[in-house]
Length: 349
Ligand SMILES: Nc1ncnc2c1ncn2[C@@H]1O[C@H](COP(=O)(O)OP(=O)(O)OP(=O)(O)O)[C@@H](O)[C@H]1O
Ligand SMILES: [Mg+2]
Image (cartoon, rainbow, N blue to C red; front, side, top):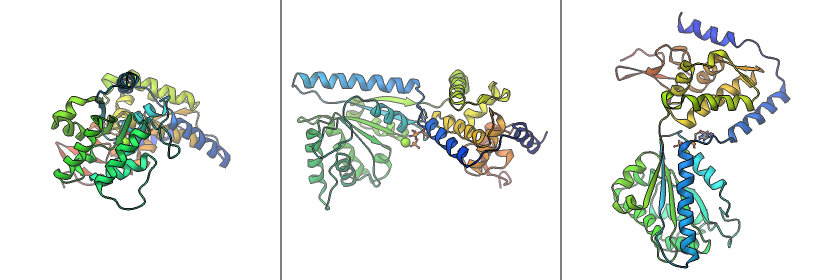
């Protein structure tokens, strides 16, 4: 059977849904927005929570004795789409104390920001001031900015600073500028007046950054969001699919209840936890918008095609040699013995 016939069959099989009108579309959008806010707990998240709680208890104990001990940090590392930002945001949102500063004098035990570009001392410091509720009105020298940062961290009784996209500290600037920022951030952890723990989330380059710096290595523990494989995560994937379908009130089609589908799903999501969830949600969206009561392979075929713009032969839910497809590529690319070719292009051309 050609891949085009397979595509037609998969799409025909899901059949006609009930007519869906404007108000139905609105309620589907709301249902999807709710589904997207759901958080699926996984082992790296449990590890992160555990390490965070441990550091927090340690810091609180030191504070209760009114003594000094340098703070430590956690690096949350994984490929794009693995779920780093979501995991740390979840951790912060469940924190029982006060987080982002509400007004100028408020306590903010955790502040969160994204590393700006370029990640120079001045830009990082300004972003930190902004996150602490004190945006700079005028241009100031870096030394002034960091004095203010240290002062405000103490004022706000900040225990942790979360820096997302931390790999940009390592790749965005010259080696000299990079060392200046890394050293300044490190100095926040052993600041005698008010030590602050760091949570660095970012791509695997963060590991390189830590590895070349003995002081960082000693102070940071690592939580890794590793690639997902169907052999190690088959049950979790099946459970996750069930949970989403349950909430969306969709039955799970027979063609999704097998290992082959789960392997295709994992590959379509580039083996990353977050991207696999996004792929499931895209399929669910197609089913709901079509007014279907059952989620089938055809929904994943159309959802993947819409997202990547690929031809059927480069759709991992259809192609027999789906492992050769690069699922992250827009328009689809496939590798033949290590050579990449574009969707519809001749391989090796
Ligand atoms: N545990 C989870 N439960 C539900 N959805 C998740 C979970 N983890 C990730 N996601 C979803 O996966 C997608 C990618 O996650 P996220 O943005 O956190 O990845 P990331 O690792 O920060 O990627 P990047 O490096 O590109 O910033 C998001 O749409 C998010 O909602
Ligand atoms: Mg992110």
